[in-house]
Image 1 (cartoon, helix red, strand yellow):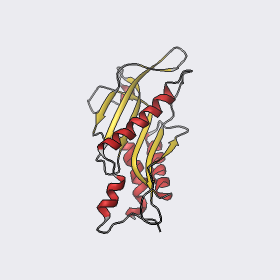
Image 2: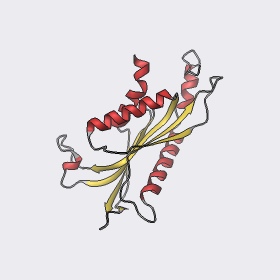
Image 3: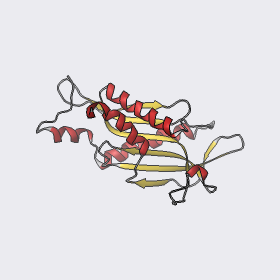
Image 4: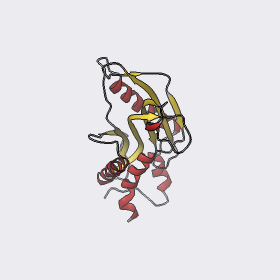
Amino acid sequence: MNRLRTDDDGKKHRDMFEPTDENFNEMFNEIISMVESSVFTPDGTKTYAPTVFLKYRTANDDDSLSEIKLAVFVIDGDFNNGETKNEVMYKIGREIFKYQLLPVGIFFASEAWMSRLNDGKTMPSQDPNRQEVIICAGRTVSNKHSVGLSIPIKRNKDGTIMADGEKIKTDKIQTGLLERLLAGYFEFLLK
């Protein structure tokens, strides 16, 4: 049975799917490029569906790990309710575990509201000075690497999305939705 080793060789095997700083940044930049090419098309787009990008490996029969691959989960339907978001992300995590995928990098992109208020009370969607963005967040399972990028957007008269300012990158972010995905992934291991 394919498994992740836990013997004395465990560190070596963990290192095989914990990317270097350079590899994580390359993965993140690849995801950003994919998101931007989906959002900023020549014909324009009016919406961007929440999307999970999973960079993963699988265990081979000889306990070696495959090359890094990509799985994409496009979330269809209502994703505005916090409870629904948590449930969907948890289910995606369970699916990742079900198929024995070993996450190397987990990324999420979606339309969002950004607020510069830091009062801890006001939701970004309620801030009168909010900025609409495409948010991209990523992390490793260990959270050794975590990053976020907000791409400010605006909409023209027909609702087409257009870039609207400089991208804002944030290192060492906490991403509740990705943490919920990992909770689903690890559910079976913690029972």
